[in-house]
Image (tube, rainbow, N blue to C red; front, top):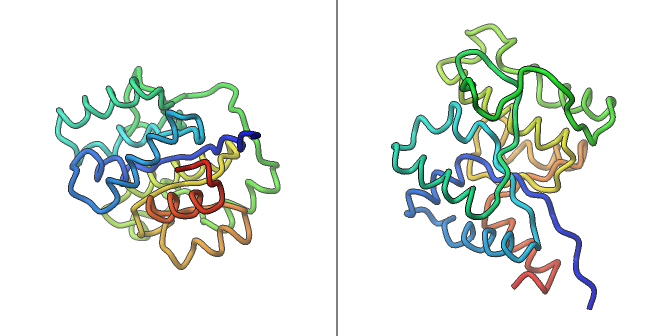
Amino acid sequence: MSRQPCLSVTVDTSVWIHFMNGRHSSVPYTHKMLAWHQKEFIRIFASSRVFDPDAIRMNTEQKMLLRDLFLEMKIEVASSPFRVGISRVGGPDVISGPVTVKRSSDDIVKFRKLLGDEPASLPPANVGKRLKNKIGDYDALSIHYTKGRDVFVTSDEHDYFHRARRAVYSKELGLIIQDPQEFVETWTSRFPDFR
């Protein structure tokens, strides 16, 4: 029996926060994704934004447990562009250097046109009080897309992740965004080995 190709999956901060709290309906699906990761059916990535700035909602123990989980499970934390006031000095973000891009320049232009300008470049009145969150979401989705990963998994349904936008992303960019339950149900039905 031939093995199905390994899917590359970015798991968003919202999913990790729910998983660490342990009281959300997505937790069993996250456990399933982690099991698939261990079996090498999928390869999970996390955005560096899970720690900067998004981890502000996690307590210190949760942050340590999440770092330990990533180390134990060999989950790669993908670097984002270094941003003053968001990135940690000595953290995973990069100031400059070669970035592996698996999308064409036309694809990246299309992505920026569809999602809009990055939040840091917008007037503060257009962004509101959640600038750091919007930057985190934009960076995580942008890195996922430019790296050519297969599926972005999030529990978030705001701004860039709004359900009404997901079909447009899929059609125009081939960018698939699913919540943990959708992801597990979709891929279990497509790949019977994923059980």
